[in-house]
Image (cartoon, rainbow, N blue to C red; front, side):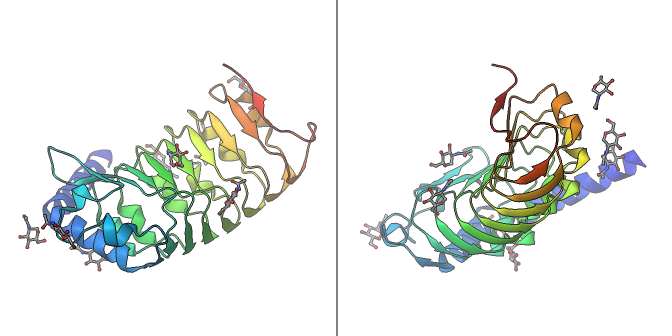
Length: 238
Ligand SMILES: *[C@@H]1O[C@H](CO)[C@@H](O)[C@H](O)[C@H]1NC(C)=O
Ligand SMILES: *[C@@H]1O[C@H](CO)[C@@H](O)[C@H](O)[C@H]1NC(C)=O
Ligand SMILES: *[C@@H]1O[C@H](CO)[C@@H](O)[C@H](O)[C@H]1NC(C)=O
Ligand SMILES: *[C@@H]1O[C@H](CO)[C@@H](O)[C@H](O)[C@H]1NC(C)=O
Ligand SMILES: *[C@@H]1O[C@H](CO)[C@@H](O)[C@H](O)[C@H]1NC(C)=O
Ligand SMILES: *[C@@H]1O[C@H](CO)[C@@H](O)[C@H](O)[C@H]1NC(C)=O
Ligand SMILES: *[C@@H]1O[C@H](CO)[C@@H](O)[C@H](O)[C@H]1NC(C)=O
Ligand SMILES: *[C@@H]1O[C@H](CO)[C@@H](O)[C@H](O)[C@H]1NC(C)=O
């Protein structure tokens, strides 16, 4: 069963790689660009020239070897707009940082195709909807920053099932409700857990205090009950 799964995964991966190249990446970024409706710093006109390779666009980095986009860092660019689903075609992307912009709308499901993602930072925007549960299926994901948006709903347990590598889960300053799932303790590599300023209720899962990897925990400004009121940053280790 495991072997079959492995072969299917490899086959899907190979098809993806064959079907995509820098032209696909270019189309993805052009689609991304068309959904940016405000650009006060004139980045689109002056720094994302259509007559140069996307690898020379400010905030974009490509792998030399594969000539594919591996990094997008558009933090603090002043962009407004929504996220084009085409971004999910950047199959080599490992680092995505669009923090501190004015993006709205939901995070497209197509981004779940980004199987190489190691870090995703969409903090300080105005995204709505639920925290994407597919984040729990990205095998190498180390850092999730979705803080300071308008995410609602509960913390998806699927995010917590098998995510043995996740080190940072930053969901502070949103509108998350419900309990903190007991399964949180299954994040065996988690070092930073920030859930401050949401609408979480119920008791603090006791297992949290048993997570040997945890260094910082911030649960302040919620409606949690439990034997440690007003928990803010607890440094377990230095
Ligand atoms: C990229 O792939 C498309 C098909 O998906 C193909 O038409 C195109 O020629 C390829 N470009 C390069 C530079 O390999
Ligand atoms: C690209 O276009 C800009 C103007 O849009 C021009 O200033 C620049 O010289 C062009 N670069 C190349 C490499 O053709
Ligand atoms: C993303 O951008 C912000 C703002 O520039 C920066 O503080 C942060 O270190 C960057 N990277 C990650 C992974 O958050
Ligand atoms: C890229 O993604 C879009 C939307 O998700 C899709 O419609 C399109 O076919 C994809 N393009 C390529 C070349 O894979
Ligand atoms: C949240 O984002 C806004 C801008 O979108 C920024 O002004 C504010 O400082 C951020 N707050 C926190 C707590 O990060
Ligand atoms: C959490 O981990 C325990 C063992 O460490 C396992 O028995 C349990 O099924 C896991 N829970 C989930 C929801 O994956
Ligand atoms: C977690 O991983 C184990 C073994 O890799 C697998 O059997 C199980 O189905 C996974 N659970 C989830 C919820 O993905
Ligand atoms: C904490 O971990 C120890 C050792 O793994 C285990 O025996 C104990 O049951 C755990 N306690 C909780 C509350 O998870």
